[in-house]
Image (cartoon, rainbow, N blue to C red; front, side, top):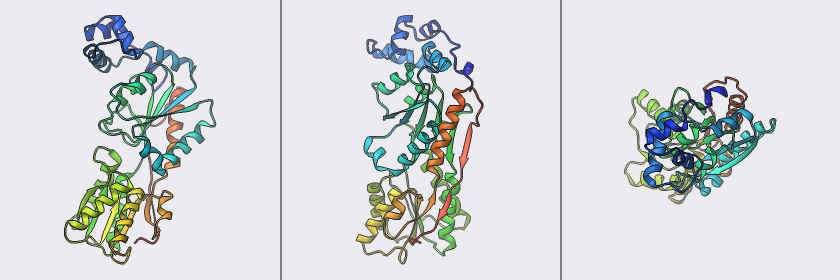
Length: 337
């Protein structure tokens, strides 16, 4: 994406005509003003999205690089952000790459805010571009940000488009290889604890698990959503234990969830790996802080952060980086299998 490609080709008058409002109303919406009726606000937003309108002020900011600021947008709550080591690695990688440039990083921890505080700020020309990490199907406000500044996604976008730029890990392959490792160890009743179904990473890791189980003629021994949290993993493990025949192995789609799983199993007197084998995903510091030390699929989160920042810097410089970059995962064997 060159600077020319993000410059507005649709006028504010055309947006006003499509929305059936005045030019000044469109201007107020673009500038984040609250002095607009809900009906007019919805009509203008719809027209902006349909026409792919880019406010001139944002385009000028991109052309002149006056802000030298990049936004990291994380559509999660603060508990999730500060409690998951994945985000620390991502931020470290981004910061390391931006340290070689004049750009500064602005962090926005934001869910889908009906008030659009984050969206209005980013659309105002306050940043040159954005990196979006950990987005969900419901995070529709991301599309409005992407309409005015270059965006690089951490992970496959929820609604993938040909023009999108993203850096992901091979989650399908990671899920498949983790499950195949358990199968190779002789396990036949393999369950999985997944992340939320509205997140592409969770969907892809589940797909990899299903592929491996089907390829070996096995039946899934249980699929439960653990919401990518330790508490969620613990609750999912309790549901699996209450469901009937106990699995002999579990692929857990994040190390944080695996920590919750191990706590429940220890409390139930189920030995890992003697009674049940566990494989996590991430190779975060959690993997070596639990007992037994966790076998896990390593994803290069720090490298992912560096790569995302590099792609965005290239976009802002008018270069042509790859639209899609896929990083490989690697099995790290420890004591839980």
